[in-house]
Length: 473
Picture 1 (tube, rainbow, N blue to C red):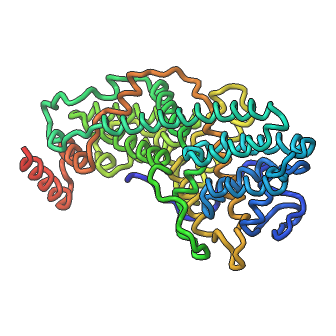
Picture 2 (cartoon, one colour; picture 1 turned 180 degrees about the horizontal axis):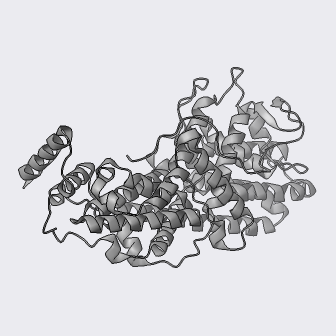
Picture 3 (cartoon, rainbow, N blue to C red; picture 1 turned 180 degrees about the vertical axis):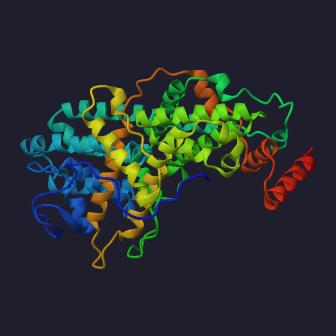
């Protein structure tokens, strides 16, 4: 698919203040100060569990809950947490030490609240909710307010799960309704068939289209849970005798849907350029998408920006030399420079840091928008995962690796929470999701019909494509 490759190298600049640390941790290796670098899984679980006098720092909770699923399924982890709580606080004794439980109870509820809010998909399994209710049953006799708090937590959890299901259903519906232009319809010159309206007939204002693309991007981001970044790269741990924790395709369905959207936008841009029969019209479409891409850059929507550039750089489009010669392209070359892969996307990463800084000091929702080039973010995380072992030779969890992972995912989590400030245009959004697009062969055929092949390789391919079309008619 039309995605730019990314060589391994520097990662995103991590957000400040995201270093999980604790007090003295028996059995853990510590960096200078209180930062954990490695520890046994048992030790890390122990330090997740609150007591009457201790509560883990929020970054530690996020880092461990994010990474622990590589070693232990969430239901089993929560079961272990419950066992430790019961044992340490003697919750299986009668009568309970009410004073002790009242000091411990709020901390336990806080941990459960953070877990359900940040990783709601973990609680799709009934046994997870069962563990929550069991714990509350044990501490509620000491304070009835615990029931009220837990009911509020469960109510919010159910709302989140319902929204997640709705989002996944909408992605499936869009995938079913999006169709492809038959390749034989690419073979036209004087009388293009009435197959669809073009983008400029739907929206001829580049600022409006850039804003609607931002709507689509933020909607996709909103569906992706932090756990999907880890579950996308789950492999068998050579030091672990258990099976991998995840094999369900649904565990990464939102992440995969977002990658499919990027590829669809690439092909949609290429289709819109190759489809017009006249050179002047094609040049006009090129100039329009250059302006759209420029506005995406100004907004901070780097994912749509890169999809548009990738679509315009696809071979069936880039070979249209006469068309490009008629278009004003100075701004396009500036945008290409910004997204140049040289130096591991140095220019882009610099622009991303600038957008992130703007977001942190923003006074308006528009200034808070940061939509990263998603495929590069995935590749950064992939190379981090491949470049560092999950466990060290002594069996310890390589926690230092997961601190870095949490920094990158945590930054993404901040960006995905921004609400889109632009008003929706349902007509444009519907077109973006459902407009037919050419396949790669269809793009080449339309390109050759627009500007004749220049060499024998192109002539042979054109002949084969036309023969294939005639064979299907």
